[in-house]
Length: 163
Image 1 (cartoon, helix red, strand yellow):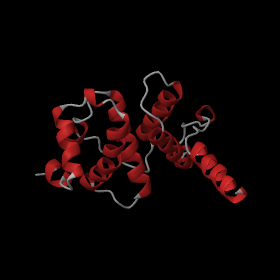
Image 2 (image 1 turned 180 degrees about the vertical axis):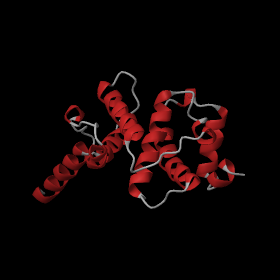
Image 3 (image 1 turned 90 degrees about the vertical axis):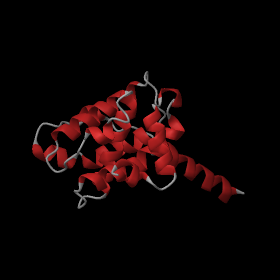
């Protein structure tokens, strides 16, 4: 019985720690090297965003989003393609677009040698769409976003995005 309780508490501590936001105020993004050094924190920020529900009034989530956008705009080690073809599905809501950007960042950091625009976009879509389906208010979804999700769910995402 003790082993079960210990395992449960250990699992719970991992789950809670994965949702904590690092102290972003202490991270300065003012030099080229600082962006590279911030990558582990960026991954934690992305993890935080993917483990917290979308809430407009969540200040920590807003701070995480601002930090991510600042890092994406300033890093010279990674190139992020925010093409209209892909971002137009999320333009109806800034939180949806932020999550696409978080997914793009996660994919790019996890696959640093993959520089091709379409592959990055598909990788990001495969990360963000299941999250959005679980977490976002589907009342704000456009017809096109539903079509994108359905294509993804049916394994036809590439054909839908790039006919």
